[in-house]
Length: 136
Image 1 (tube, rainbow, N blue to C red):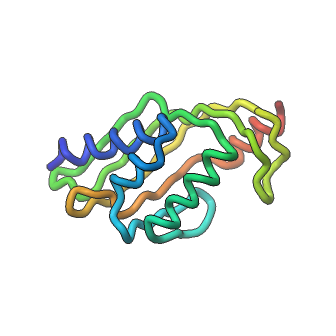
Image 2: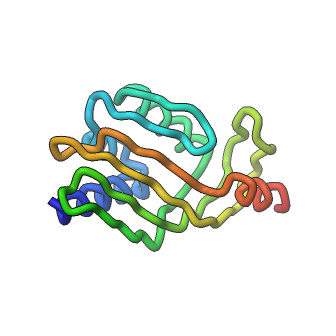
Image 3: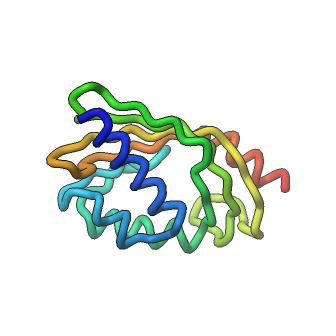
């Protein structure tokens, strides 16, 4: 179970890195919960699809140096990674986008049920990201 959870999280990040929304969504339960960093909670595969669409429009990102951990029963997993990206399109309440590069440490926590991801909780240092895109 532990190895299956780690492989599922790895496939999730591979799909994100390839900007393959269809492959990413196939790894999620219908009632998936997304806790957005410094934001709200969204629920359901359709809400997750809308989030991916917004993200891919505004950012070009790669999750690198993945360190995936899972508990023995495979119901919970976590991943620490480096988020390397470019800020492409201005989002409400954030600085003006002009292709600024950024690189920062990030983490995500996962809950897994019946071989699918049913919760993703994303975390990164927003003040650090703001400093990088504001200083560009």
